[in-house]
Length: 328
Image (cartoon, rainbow, N blue to C red):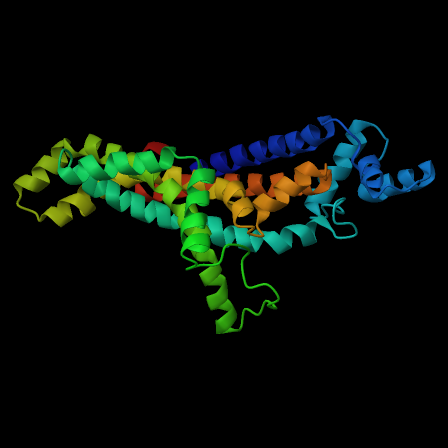
């Protein structure tokens, strides 16, 4: 419980710091978003109307600390304001329309990459020096070194434009009304997700593979592994029950970091496949100087990052009894 309280206190302080930074950075950017919004509309607007719009959108001319406390109050009540770019939509509406797609695409890709990469890394370590290890480890690292935009463009051109096996854009067929109770719509969503999901997964496998391989190699020379082999235990039991279980602990931290960043980390893939996730929302908000959406997006990313890191801390303690004894 002491460990739990200490870690929770740390993450709450980190959250407050991130919220403060989230408040300061957009306001340090050049340009006035409200003035830019009316300038893009190419209409004459009176100063009174600009002032009224600033008040509506939360850009008051008061002291910075007053704006900060208004911002904190909005976060506590989850009132993130009104989007400048898609006025009169609220930030909550903009986020709600995209967060589900990002969770599906990025979350599924991270979990698949972790499972595949960790499994491949376990066998690469156990058979280190073999032809399998000489092929799979460098091969996946080469794939990981290729920029995501190159991987996505190759996949798009080959399987969507060239072979026409899969659709090239969006999350479902244009003109279709979303209906999650319809199996036909779900199949359409899965069909459209194949290529972006493949790209998001393949570029992450190499990191998990090398991480697990290195962890396993460090453990294979431990005395308890030698004893397990000497007792005549099966190869599968030695690999998975003794070595992989302990080698998995550092990988849990890597998984939590990847899950935390996944919510906004597929920007390039979402852009290329025109996938309606938070990465696309973030890019549009930056281009439009939409401070409200920027703050909402960064807040969600921060919450996800801190949450998954906190869960990783708790999970590692649960998996490793030595840490529980050390905490006492």
